[in-house]
Image (tube, rainbow, N blue to C red; front, side):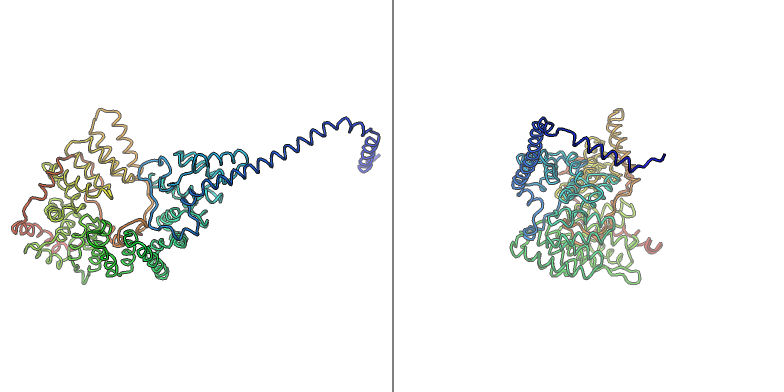
Length: 615
């Protein structure tokens, strides 16, 4: 007998039908009626509650958006108002180790109020959304809970793929404040993360300007110039003043068409700013730099001269000094292996702004391009200046650099002293002289200390880490190790990625108290950091001036200057009364006999040039 599946199905269907028609359903329904009524009411209440929660969440969301409107406009201006926004501010970066304690003040001058945060937290409880989670995360960042804020924002803006665009933008901005505070291995990870978030949010109409600029600079560092150009173009469309940065990058890439386009837009924008506010020093400074980039030095000087000398800010004085440095650089001519240069421009630049660090770099460039031995023609010119007593500070600066490059500190000292005597505010030469004196003349360490302290004081507006390193070196020479540690820690705070600073710090901690286990632990920690920094390869900055820089493009032509001392010097040192030291440094008379002696000292330069040729 064969089984027929269709018959089984038919039989089962017949059984179900017979069972249904034989039941007394009216009685069953009558018995179940209360349960049906209560079940229906329960479903109605559930649906109504769900709808009410949605409506209530929507009302809280709308009310919360009204409460944060001012903050959102301050953080990410709407396109209609962005064109009127000031374009001279630059994104700040953290300059201390570790994560910043809270979202920097310039990023949230108008903060999210506790009331607004509570509204969005209610939205999260009623009907969670990306918008409410974003606002709550930002509010946490403003209170200083950056790790928790980043974790919350990362849920809606992942590091892989695209999420909630405003959260991408906020994460990118938070990373800009954290990036430079990290050592090289960690900074590479943060840079990649920042570039991802910036890429995901770059087309958002309210992406913060600081995000576009930071991501552009990072792309320049890693050599992705096309991405940097794209980001700067977006920034320039919203903020016409950022065409200045675009022109800088276009010039670096030798893209003449883009440079002309960006140059014209930047000039128009900056001229409009100056027309509205002639005292806008930042706009004037950028306009000067813009003309300098295009080689229009006379036009740049004219814009600068429109400001009376007594009203010029230090930044404008630096810009004028840089104009003459550019002219000096353009005056360098090489024919048949012989180099000629017009030192008058260098003298003028030095007189206008003795503390300009680019002056030493320009001199260093000239020295290095010659071997570092100077050509016979240039030697003859310098020698004649020394012999007839007409040597200028620039002459002595050049000769000092020749000896410094060759590590001949003894012969460099007299020339450094002449520069410092005639230009007491020349910070680079104060610093170099301080190091040379401490290295060769322990009995003059107190004078060296005064020179070092003066260099730091004069550069306090733009502190230099290498100046604090020199101070630490001098203090160690004087056996004042506690103060030397403070100085080198200041240098590390300004530039945590210099391995030689950590090496010096380790040596100072060991000299402070050789029996102290705590000092030994600190020394070992610095040595480990130094080793890690030596083994790692940090991101390399392309030679494009930063958008926030106040230096002239000549800096990009002269950025090959090196510190006076070698990186492996880990001596112990220290020094005296600053006023007395400065007095000692500036009270030596300059006589004809002294200059002739210096000329005789420099005969070695001529002999080596004639005998050995150039390197």
